[in-house]
View: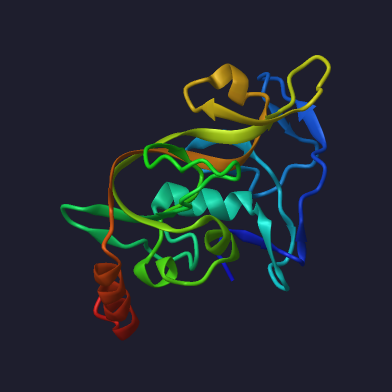
Amino acid sequence: MPYIAMTANEWLPVPDLVAGQDGWIAYRTPGPYDRYPDIDVLLARTEGTPGGRVDGAHLSAIRQFHCMDRLLCQGCGRPATYVPGKGWLWVLTEFLESGQPTAVTGPTDMPPSCARCALHKCPVLKRRGRQLLWVAEADVYGVYADLYPPPSGAVVTEQLVPLEDQTTLSTAVASRLVRMVHRATPADRGLVAELAAQQQSGRM
């Protein structure tokens, strides 16, 4: 199953939040994975145990952050493929839900991929196409988050918040870490297949 995807045995609870003395929101009952190391933002909790049918519509925040921060494969959680002079291997959809072409530069919440997982079948990619890209530059930029601003606490959903915006981050429950993709070039499928074979044989 895709490493970052939630499964049927997991769920997203409704956040039970309180305002801390420092002005940052927190969970009423603290947990060990409330914040990702070195990224000071509250994470959306995933409860349950991974297993069962894959839920392609939702991602586990802690697993997505782990892959995106450490440039691990979104499919298997192992190191993503890197080729000197080309960059990291990324898989993006060819088209947005609207039918418009997907930009190959700008913010993305999808972590990179290893060569093997890049060639695997995926329902989303089957429906919206598959772009294999070498990405030479992908700086950590921000998070997608739901905001719970005081005093009302009324939720503002799915906002892209730069990490430098500490005021907004203090009210955020983040679901995905975002990198800003630059210097992306098409990846030759033949080379990716060759790298996948090397990976399979243990030569990578």
